[in-house]
Length: 306
Length: 240
Image 1 (cartoon, rainbow over the protein chains, first blue to last red):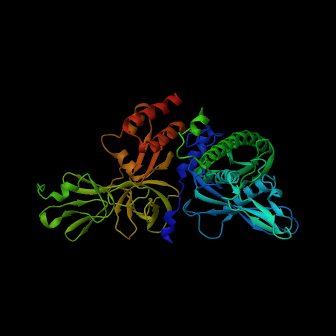
Image 2 (image 1 turned 90 degrees about the vertical axis):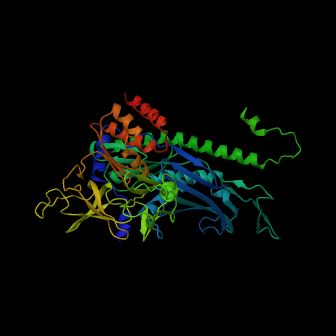
Image 3 (image 1 turned 180 degrees about the vertical axis):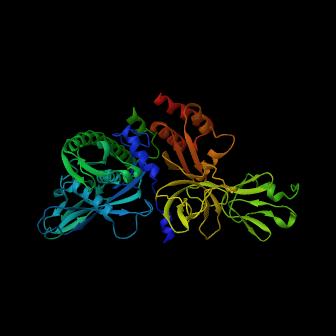
């Protein structure tokens, strides 16, 4: 028992007071301003449909897979989208293996609501044979390192993975047209998913005294803050979801201010995701070009850069 | 006393050693006292290495292995920064980033008696000295120096504590003064306490000085001396 206690991360009384006093002068402990995001890096090292997102020290990996299933009886023409989160114990000493804790379930729900309610992913295009076969898209989010603000990082990872995922093409065949033939990727090019818009989650932290508000809290700030709120908005200004999980109350004008901030941040993050996905797609396309070994090497890459 | 003819100790000093290396053979050195620091162990007549790192020697007779990790292995006579986790009848339980919680006896203060036991709430930061650190047992700490005086040990008020690797904390404590501290000290005034367990506490009059010092130290680990000075100048330009 004692061994496990000694592994926990602890916050000193000095740190708690310092974080609050510094915020009164609008200074955060990593030198950011209250409404500044940490550096976001999006990588696609593991191939199609998988992304690794890093916001500061927080790291999340997202993997998209698909399976053919029977649709729900009340929605025979729609595919399904499900999100699974895994809070690895290597991310934080307080994460235990096994049953997902409260935080894991809440994170999964926020991302699920942002994608499903806003119909970001077109589920009708996932239907192959109405009532019999539809694609079930499964997004697995693995938390690798908890440096604060897991929701935003996990959301970006999910979106980036969805944008680069390619599902196999399938056609109807058989005697009565009721059989589904799934073509392997070598025979027929796999297809990307139809994503209408990108709902971006932005998390705010509230500190009761003086009504201090900040964006993208780090691990230390999360331990000290009085309340949190996540807003999922897209670049068009639509609100996809809002989640305020307990904590202290905030007046209405603060919520409106958060909305404005969230919309402006969402625009820049959307652009960043789209740029990263496009760079990955270009690289993937270049890899597929078959080069003749005896040709005198017209370097396609150089031409593109010019 | 000049034992340079046995090549094994001199050969290993300042070079990388791995667990299992035998660095000293005591049978060939008689009538000498050798002090063994962290990372070394005595097996009858041979001193062997337990932790991978660089073997260091300081006159007249102290040997130890230096390595840099995020976690700390308690070693006697180290000064560390600990956080109070719990208080029992006889000891305070302190977290020093080691494999087990450490005990701070309730009486280990200057002029400490049963009547004036200090009250530390959970989360208090203390500057302490390691008294006992045996393998498998909880380490023991003290708030006094060897002679029983308080000497700066005890609770630290205000300020901000952050964590770094053990190698960087040793570099910060080395003399002559580490370049990053010198560069920061020329322009800013702050108070700093460095624990060999990888914890640093900084205090200053205004929060932005604290934030600059903390971030500068955290980033300086992989930079060379010249780069550290350039980084400090860059940071200071932004606030002035």
